[in-house]
Image 1 (cartoon, rainbow, N blue to C red):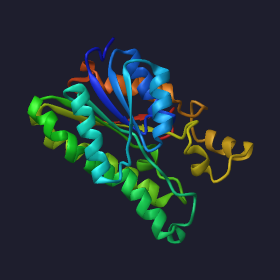
Image 2: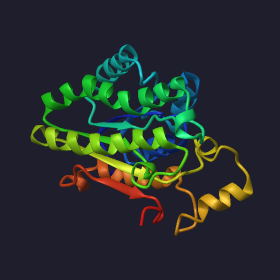
Image 3: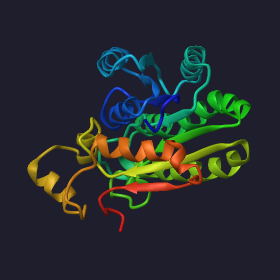
Image 4: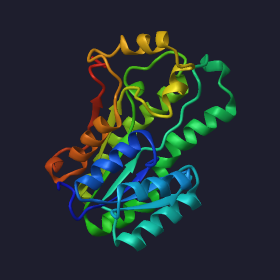
Length: 248
């Protein structure tokens, strides 16, 4: 029960890595807001994982929506101890100059602007308490970029740099900020990364991962639990690669 008595928000929490993080947090004693753009999925998943979870519909690229999420969490929990910025999108594998402006704007709004918005609406209460933990779900794409995912790669590189600068600024306020860098996993984004899901393309992806498998939601939940627990009280500004050796 490493998170007993803690409260958390996990964006994109209804599926994929976010769902793995929610499950782990609940099992370790936290109360968790499952925040997702798919409100029905969030409600169904929150009901599935038990009384410790509540659902919230949120568009993380919208300031009004993020403010409503924060206000609802603070009203329900009293304070938010842990914020996990997990929601993310990608464009399809495309030559960098051929990615549409709409796709570029969507990637930056969901992967980049969201980190600013959640900080804007939740850091003040963490500062007031003098404690808090923020975890950004970045990617190995921000460290070892894949061709034809250029603007997605860049958004995750931004998230890693944001993690480090947030950590430096917020440490005196008692707030830790870390990131995890998963490799591709069995999530709704996998097909987007690959362009198409075929045995040949999967084999090509797996050949770049020394451990020989994709990241799983359970892998992310375990790493997130450590970084957001008091066991990691001296860890801040880290972008932990949970990638089976992909970035070596």
